[in-house]
Length: 123
View 1 (tube, rainbow, N blue to C red):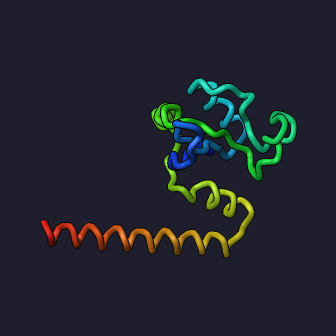
View 2: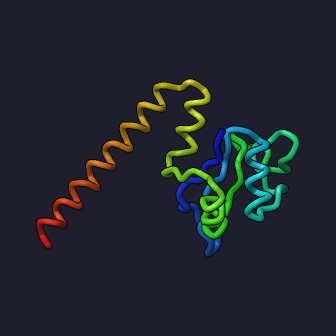
């Protein structure tokens, strides 16, 4: 069982936010208690979430970059921006979505490696 955190790319005012989720609700709540996020901000849970937050497609918290750092220090696993979608696809057994995400990740790595090689040649 694990807790995960993705890249902080979602602006909320001047704060950059990211997602925190886990393989179990107990792990997720233990992590937010540990890093100082209030449980009332849970999203996607049928009874613990409130208002529009109940409509989230999966159980998670939106957290700021500073809390992300604390979560990683507390053992959360860093993922890329597709981490949550990939995790959910694995739980659902959606192999088509997993293959699509893996393809996007592979293409991104190819572009990054090519750019690094070009920079090395130029430098």
